[in-house]
Length: 186
Image (cartoon, rainbow, N blue to C red; front, side, top):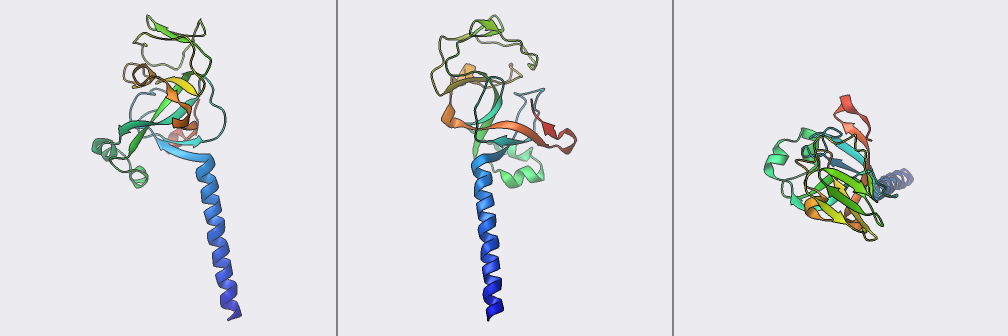
């Protein structure tokens, strides 16, 4: 009987340790999947990304945030086996964009050029020209202006408006799928 108690205690300890590790991981870290080409060439469809959920968000960071869009059946059908285990059609679709300006910044988009605080950004990462003129005198505290790197197909702050800090899920730091492209994301 003593051996049974010891074995039960070991099982309970193992379950509790697993639960604590799981909770800590989910509090500080997360994963997401790229569903479209709005961040091309930096990120492409079906890239799987590792994110940090805590920490400061700065201009140039790539972040994932909650949107009102949903994962369509076509999106789901295009996923690989592992991705299908993690997602299902109809669930909210998180968007992945680059932070262009944050609280206290001014932003202006005019004639295809992006200006933050009056200075033109040197955006070596973009794939296409920037359309839609936009002007914010001062971005309020807790708000961010975000755009995709592939501006002609990106659904971003030009249409959505500013993104609230509470909707940001995490900052993208690492690509873990596909394996041939594993590494940090800039």
